[in-house]
Image (cartoon, rainbow, N blue to C red; front, side):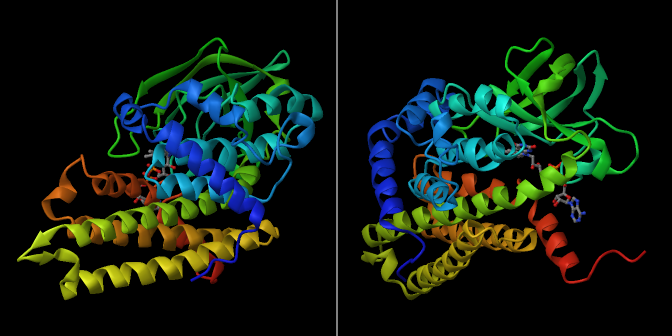
Length: 387
Ligand SMILES: Cc1cc2nc3c(=O)[nH]c(=O)nc-3n(C[C@H](O)[C@H](O)[C@H](O)COP(=O)(O)OP(=O)(O)OC[C@H]3O[C@@H](n4cnc5c(N)ncnc54)[C@H](O)[C@@H]3O)c2cc1C
């Protein structure tokens, strides 16, 4: 089906981004995968070419467009090409962390941070999860106490994407003790070089190897009050508000990843022979691939509708949760079927489908697990816990 989401401007971004991926990512991606990290200078190069943080206003060097379709093009194209690490790094930077730095910042903070986020001189991460608090954001224990115009931060975060490559970490901390998350959490920007801020090892993951994921440690880190985002105590509300865009971005990346896996599988089954014929000509293969194609088409239509609603400012938290849940589950089914059609070669790391399979798995877990997505949707149907 013809997609109707994009205008010629988006198509032209897709063209230039694709040629960048061909030229400056494809030849090196395996190397980054082995190194478990995208080199910092590549992120700067991406910024230099204008592919970072399109929503930053022009007066701070950005493209000044809060049209999420530009982000969609960047995310889905990288994911489709199998460069999930690039899609994820950029998505965390400008789909997930940037909205906090755009919407909750004073003019002084904007001047301090935004230009670097466009050029890639600064790279962003978001740190909510802790060893004891993942799904249960309200259980955050990283503590920030006020002292002489600063917050003194103690605690630890884990599973932080861009954990090593980031300079600015949008960090959820506990500042209050009322016992109500809606009043006790705040958001601080913790910066590279602050005394007492350290990073753990690059965590060994099942997939998305080119992307760095790390633990972060805060030991008496003195964060100036000027690094508070928005109002103290309103952190939980800010997190809940911004999670919708994060979930939409994951849905977009999931569809891109599934599309790439399907394209590569179609090529493979036309070429690979068994019993004297291409494996794609068995009725089972045809049905499986037709079903994948159909599921992808339906999923794409839904995610495109969610992106369009978001562009109009009308995407609800529940609809973002549906998009994330459905698209990532569909991706899981599609990459699994595609891997099966590769036979034993699908299990070999040298075949891209094995990477697609491993990379896809995280999408059902992070950004709020799919069980949490169903909780959100279930509650919106009036099905909360009995009191
Ligand atoms: C590669 C990777 C990158 C990540 N990047 C980031 C990042 O950049 N920043 C960040 O802050 N976090 C990040 N995370 C953390 C991620 O968001 C959490 O792992 C996720 O939210 C789940 O939390 P948890 O791991 O603590 O699992 P748990 O909360 O312990 O959940 C375990 C299981 O219980 C289920 N469960 C929990 N609560 C409920 C419930 N109420 N009802 C039903 N089932 C429930 C979950 O769905 C899951 O299946 C990342 C994680 C990974 C693995």
